Amino acid sequence: MKVVTSPRALEVIADRGGRVYVWTRKARCCGGLTTLSTASEQPAGIEFERVADDPFEVYLPVHARRPHELHVDVSRAGRRIEAYWNGCAWVC
Image (cartoon, rainbow, N blue to C red):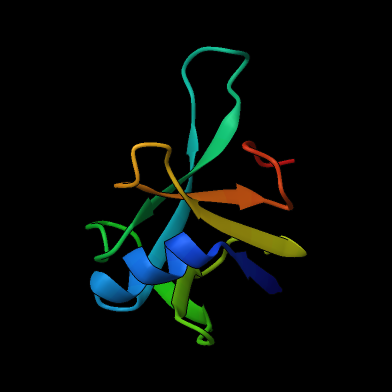
């Protein structure tokens, strides 16, 4: 899996400890569209494994399918880390 990261995201991730946890979330609307959620600390109730460690640590759920590319960026407000599955806002 290739991790593609914006320069601003690298700064924000480093400031928050150098880790990103990424997991899927299924929406209740929009036909059950599956999107990605992120956090700097491990959320409760999900078992993660490290899948990348350069230039920062990336953790995905243990039995999750892996994208070819995981794009990591920062929200427009510059506070929230966002992840994209093969460049898309939803998981295909």
